[in-house]
Image (cartoon, rainbow, N blue to C red; front, side, top):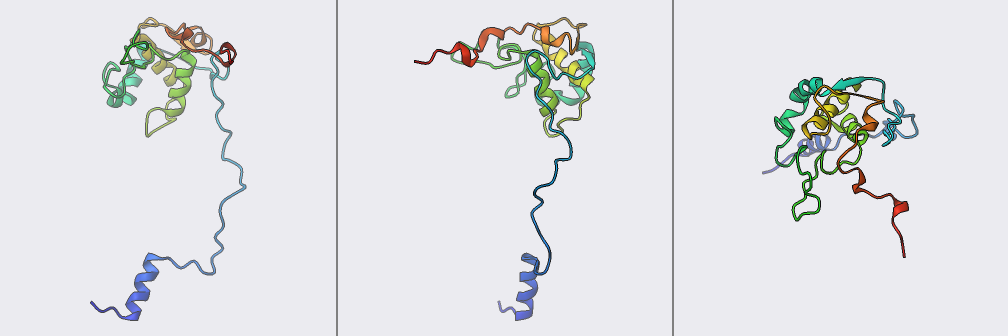
Length: 172
C-alpha cells in the first residue's frame, strides 16, 4: 500500500506528539502533599484515638474484606485464620493467629494497605474494628472486646515469642 507524505506526517504526529517549544520539565523538588504516615510501633506508639470491637468489625469485614478473604477469613491464597502450630511443619500457614507477633502490626498493615485496591478508605474506628474481628476469628480476643490505643498493644499474640531481635542473635 502506498502512503503519501502528508499521510505519513499525520500518522507520525499522532503517534509521536509534538513537544517542540513546550516547557516540559520533571516535577522534582516539590513538597509532598502531606506528611508520610508514621508506622505503628509494637508498643502502640502512633496508634490513633478511636475504638472498635469485633462485633463492629464483622460488619466492616463483610463490606471491605469478604470478597478477598472469604466469609471466615479462610479463603485459599488469602488466609487470615487458622494455621496455629503449623510454622514448624512442612506446610506452614502464616495467618494473623499463627504468624503475626504483635496486634499493633496488624492494625498498621490494615490501616496502610487494606482493602486492596482501595487502600486507606477505612476510618481509624473501622481499622480497630476489623483488627478486633480478625483477632476474634483467631480465638485471641472475645467478640465484645473493644480495641483502642490502650488495649491493642496489650493483646498477647500466639507467636509473640516466635521472632528474635538482632540483639538476640549471636554472630560468630
